[in-house]
Image (cartoon, rainbow, N blue to C red; front, top):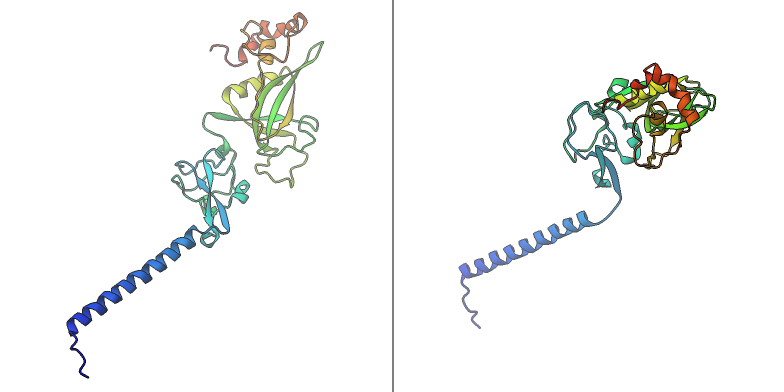
Length: 270
């Protein structure tokens, strides 16, 4: 039996097409598998990243960083995980960062300096404290506190002074560690220039005490009572004041008005 003659060129073309189709199918299969592996949810690591453009010297805080989730297989040994954010909170950067850049330990200046911890437009002020006003020396840098002033008078009265103040240092302690942080006699606060003036003036009128605030508590109440006591001629804001002034309380602070000390209190000329 005689076999039909096969065109070698046609056979070669068919083989070439078959190989091309098989190669394309194999490539697509491998590609789809890689995409599936990337999309497959597995163990992830949360890293600290810049949420905005940051310049060298910027102070790291929750206001300028956020978190990014990466697969554990892409973990980076020098990157700062979210779980360790407290180790870099309040520290200055040594490099510029763009939004989305992962923060590395090597990018952070791990030596705190009080001047680098003060935001632009703010001031650092140190006030003396005792065991009672420092909440048994349990305050630590980074805590938020409210300040109260107990005025010296025949009828002592305690009114709010400032709320939500950040502690920069307790004694000479700038970080949040508790070791060697007992027995401090003063605390350093991050305040505005006006608040610094108000605190200085209030300290001359009575005793300043601190109350510890939950860092997530953003509820601020009226603090106009002190201003109204030392300067009763200034209009009271249209909110409920925690203190109703009496004629006795007014007379107790009248000697400050006659000595012109009341002009030290902020917003006099505003």
